[in-house]
Length: 395
Image (cartoon, rainbow, N blue to C red; front, side, top):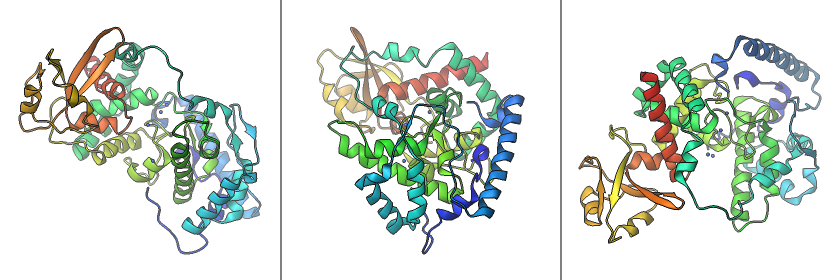
């Protein structure tokens, strides 16, 4: 990545496959693009880049074991992950399936830190107040985020237009996602991704879905190593959220491998420092998850439901649009706006605590956003933030 270019050539060499090269293309985030950052920050980043490249050259010529140089400014403890049988089995698998050298991986895990805060943060929240869409909404549809969105759109209007032309995803939806995820790059996360993923892959807290979550994080740990090898970066230089999400759009490593786009065409895929790469990657993700460019109108329509409640089974149809306008009307769902007759739709409910629930008719494009984060509240926040930024930008 641009600010973290091959920091250590020797490490990249050590992580190279020992046998036949294996291509690995395989997976919801927070600073404005490095290209749009303030001059002082740009100068600092440039100086850091020079220092890192020099360090990489020294490591390449010395042939000595490389130490992780990324400064850690969060709580974490040194832990010998190599004592765990599951970690040793993971290393064996990475060698047999992907050709990684065992000694190189042992060196990496010997430097990894156990992040207890990540363990605490993934624990299920205790039962609390009922879901409240209007309260949730105020976290994202607010003046600071809207103003930042206007600046982001103004600075990257050309890239947003290009993404809309290439993928058919409106600029306001891309702006909405990046704004909800990271306030346009302001907070992309400070954790070393290798630390958090190693912690959650092998020490996930007790929970009903523990086995599945550990398998997911082991997969993402593997994807991190594959991405680092493919793009020639030090795995420890990858920074992200407590759950391992990276960059302005908070992609998990597997999503970067599968859906990341070098949209600025500079030869590097960098979701942390390149707003253009983030823009193109978000658009590509949505298209690959069902965004239909032929739906030119809104992805959401306010609805009224009948007292008969014959529509209730429609809420259990999953994250897909499967209903015709006629089926909606028959079940007692009336949209406040005329629905394009050729499309398919779904019904979603946005609960408001003790206040009345809101009902909306939505199309495939709304459900594509839920593939980014499986939450109706999240998807509606993306839609509304994008609209709010568009309106504010128009003056």
